[in-house]
Image (cartoon, rainbow, N blue to C red; front, side):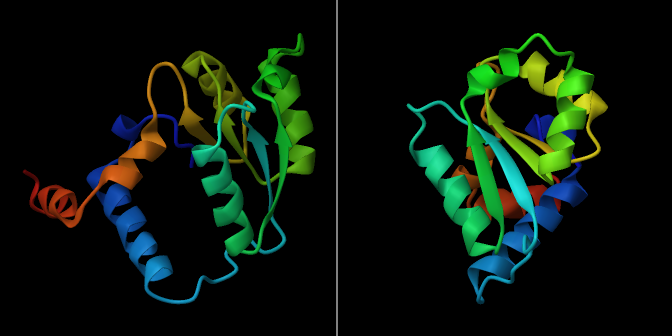
Length: 142
């Protein structure tokens, strides 16, 4: 499943993510990413988001390879680029200015592509700002 925009998720998917979050928060993290490698594209100026992803990946038993986002500006087609990246990683997490680039990559990807922030939106911030009240609203459909 790709995560490019919060509006792409159904209420059921959002509830599943909240449930998984609670499971991870209230007990020792399971090595859900053991044997998995995530490909990260982050600028040097990204500190909080990048470090949060790096720590989360390590806490869940995974590894990561970090590239600057400019690496996505190569002349290769998105399809060629994603086929190459799929040889190295099990998912892509990118902070990149243009949402359209992430959409192009995800259209060719068999691994998850996660939007860690674009000029269009910052969907992972949604999870940071959600409260039990928000979960209640989603659950009741309000």
